[in-house]
Length: 170
Image 1: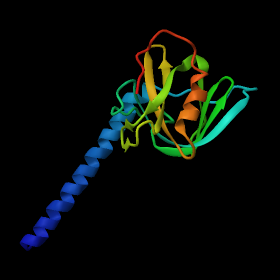
Image 2 (image 1 turned 135 degrees about the vertical axis):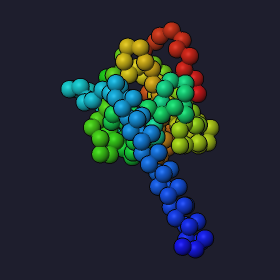
Image 3 (image 1 turned 90 degrees about the horizontal axis):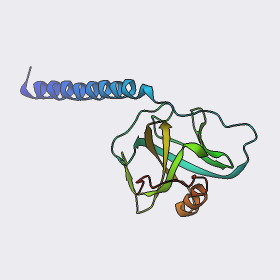
Image 4 (image 1 turned 120 degrees about the vertical axis):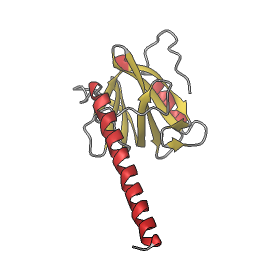
């Protein structure tokens, strides 16, 4: 075996090793976050006020935009639609059941420009802070396909119940 063949074999082994480590790390993250699930299904008689095409980017720990959560069914980036209803927000993502965030779960809606795997212009992401359970707030990030994110943010903010300062900011 020549030196060149040995170098190629080492590089292939290194690449396979890195891919295996990534796979095991993702599986571990999925097991870690299995305690969380997003609420599914839109309530009956919910009136749709607005629909927008979005790219769902990620869900992270609140105020930690680089710490991804593998929340089912929000573990993967997807195209889809956000529907603003009189009862909350529905995320209809391609290949996943509809996630519904009722008004009572919403903590804050604002803009952001960075989250895991995505950096955009200032205010280019819509951030929805919501209660995934009684003690945990998470942030879900979307990129609006068309139009001004500020208009969507303004409409979504009307759903957030008046509450004490949560510390949510972009």
